[in-house]
Image 1 (cartoon, each protein chain N blue to C red):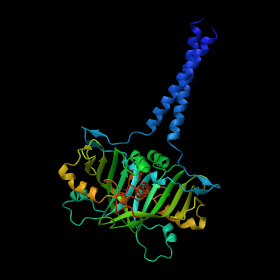
Image 2: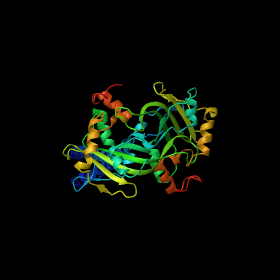
Image 3: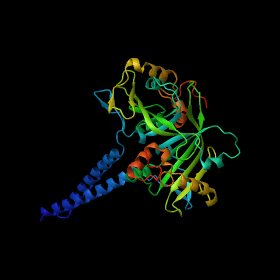
Image 4: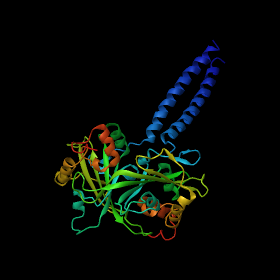
Length: 211
Length: 211
């Protein structure tokens, strides 16, 4: 008896230790991949993500025109070309890699930056400079049609959170993002690595599915 | 005695469990942040990183000229403008955020892509298309002067690993990356978010430290 009692205790505690360690492992792994989906205030006001530059870079363009920019740039005459960078939260990109579709909770951040040239060394071409405007498109089932558009406005005066564009203001965004996009409401045709994934998964709209 | 023996066993095993759990937590956290530094074959041949698109995006340029490109594009006459994207491994960027300097094991990937326009919808400007060329610069104390340059060549015929450029081939890279760079041997003046960090940390070379 004196020999068996400690052994039973030993076994039970080792099992307890193993279970405890396993659950701790899960906890730590979860902490290492923070929830990066949209965060809201008052239900639908999107809290400006302060770490979007560390998300997945989808692509950059120079001088491409967007409906949303038209409003932002109203009043300016012939305006200089600008760079547009698009980033998506990493969990959304992981989902897209698996299915070729954007999961609920996808956030697309459009960053518009000044195009500079011939600075520091006299290089040809354009490089990216000051942040000018920040916009976002969100896929979230909380919205009636599953999507919402946000405009954080000009750098230097961006609110911490903004309400989605009104139905009237969003109408041109929705029209363009519905009629002219390769995957759902996103311009995957301009995102070369995402375009490859959508082609493999067969999720490109008709007309975008040729090599 | 019969009561105290199991208790001692219990205490010692609980301590063992705690220690085991703690070490396991460390292990799992390490797994969740995979080592993303340079991987070599035969000492200095850089194994092409297949996940650099998920690294930190530093910036994009259009039509910027690089010495290394000159070689790559030799023989082509007036060539079309191309996009250049620069990515850095995440652990290197974390170090840069803390110190304003690039840690040992930093990898900078230069991705050159075709610039397309007026596709799918008749937008103005240029967007990024096919990958053309992949190059890399590595900061690693294993190299005599701490840096090495790599050229993986043209898309479609990229080797899994390449040797660093020879002293002769690297000479123009080193000259330009020494004389014209804002931080160490990197063109931080063209990477707007890294430029802000270097300005805060005071690591910009003289002449680059004005707002």
